[in-house]
Length: 208
Image (cartoon, rainbow, N blue to C red; front, top):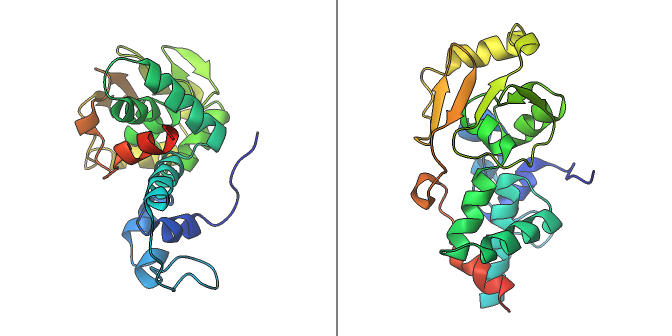
């Protein structure tokens, strides 16, 4: 399976904003974008006029990197969103938000989406009581995501469980810290996605 293995901080610098790809490090004084906010590369510090296409491309790259999906996956999600009723841009973000790895991250069981994806791949989670290893699975209302019974005793999940109480959780997830599980109370709405995306730019890009 293809995946990005380069420096995560370089992606944030390229997009000019924090994408929160490295968990707590992104909110600490060690965050690279706080020290070097220019784009990476020899000419990163040069001022460049961004045309309409450039703005659309950057917004697409920002969303793709924020959720940690590849180009072909992102295009597939866009095509799915375009076939649904409603606003294509909002549908796209909601589909990405419904990914299992994102749900694991949102429920507080991983410090980043990258880590959440790895934990799912290694079989540490169940969906409705059945072991799952596919990070791209889309959850539905009523689904229950939980840490697998045999994984709950690990020091990592114990530490994450202790930190759950003070963590802000999305209202569309009912998180049970004691059981290390979360029920999808409802599908996420556009207003539940707190990152400042301009999804209309993505729609314009793919409409060319």
